Amino acid sequence: MHTTLLLDMAADAAPDRLALGRREDGVTFSDLQRRARAGAVALEAAGGDTVVFVGLNGPAMPVAIFAAGLLGKPFAPLNYRLPDADLARLLARTAPCVAVVDDDMLARLGECPGVTMMARSAFERACEAEVDGELAYVEPDIAVLLFTSGTTGEPKAAILRHANLTSYVISTVEFLGSEEGEAALVSVPPYHIAGISAVLTGVYGGRRLVHLEAFTPEAWVDEATAEQITHAMVVPTMLGRILDILESRGAGLPHLKALSYGGGRMPQPVIERALRVLPHVDFVNAYGLTETSSTVAVLGPDDHREAISSPDEAVRRRLGSVGRPLPTLELEIRGPDGGVLPAGRSGEIYVRGEQVSGEYTHKRVVQDDGWFATNDGGWMDEAGYLFVEGRLDDVIVRGGENISPGEIEDVLREHPDVADVAVLGLPDDEWGERVAAAIVLKTGGTAPDALADWVRARLRSTKTPEVWELRDALPYNDTGKLLRRQLKVEMAGVVRPATAR
Image (tube, rainbow, N blue to C red; front, side, top):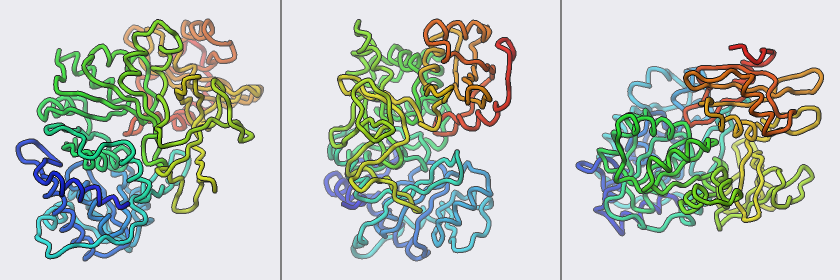
């Protein structure tokens, strides 16, 4: 199935319903369809095999997705926050292409062989033109190219085909299931899988999309209030800052019905706080990867409410899980030998299903039988709830013992003086690696020696950090992922006494 068919279905069934933008001057589904067709004509005239997008969130991005789909050309949104040299290198890898670029970013890119630059303003004007006749779909193949963050080297270009994306959308969203007047606030960047899936699921579900150009908690709350936002998705670092603004203003979000979160580990104190501040909101934890076309497991609203109120420790613990796998997917936990592990045993998370791509431009990593190794560690409880422990590359190996950073981080976050924490392994001549912790304390917080005692009392001594570093903030990328490897490089070789700052 073709992704552009999702738009055609919505435009045929609800042509006058608002699809994009503000309530007073938004774009209807029929207008979005027309703009995509006009955009396809303009992009085809510009040439190239790929449609690149370099810019902020906004209505031009969904139009470009569907226009590229009509042409049968991959849509490749690039991270405009990258240094100029890195951005130019990614752009060159997409050539020959046409690049729709925010006007004020054009000067950064300069000349690039095989790349036709089209200013965003020029693209938007072209999308207003009338198109004669019908545009036939080009045989669908690659729908989207998404570049990974490249924290361990040159970014990889993940391939998502039309069949992968439409399988995810149709299996998780009811066609035009949204009520009239519902609106989703999109604040994740265009080059993130959540930004792509927000467009496709929003269109198929018939929900108006409001794009926030750049996230700040103040702007998010203002836009959610002004546009009567009913649905939104945030990453964990965003949620805590949004709650700060709501509490400082003494404000609520009465129109908000549902808030999903994902893209990184959610500290349990933050989601517990969110449930208290916004008790009327349905919270959803969504775990997925770029290579799986977005979500593969969900912790739903009822799961949240049951976990926060249950006297059963096993049920309460599920608030730290990512829920259960989607019914359209298979998910297994496997050991180093490839064998499937029982409930309670940690291993690597494997997934299989039509939405799973597991494919890059340089190689296909999905197995012949369809299983994809996520490189995420995790385990499942007896009821099928999935607990993600983090990237397998981040596991600390101390004296032959595998230690999960997430387990130690969870314990430290329970301490009332800890605002944020990252645990990692540093080289050690005797043990292979030693456990290190970077800590952000709340105002007036305690010294690390007290935190060491806190961990030691709750976990084995081998899991107690030996190296401590106090910081004003931890490094995160713009999609909320902790830059653990950057932190490891910064801390490598540093040995600090427990009381040092």
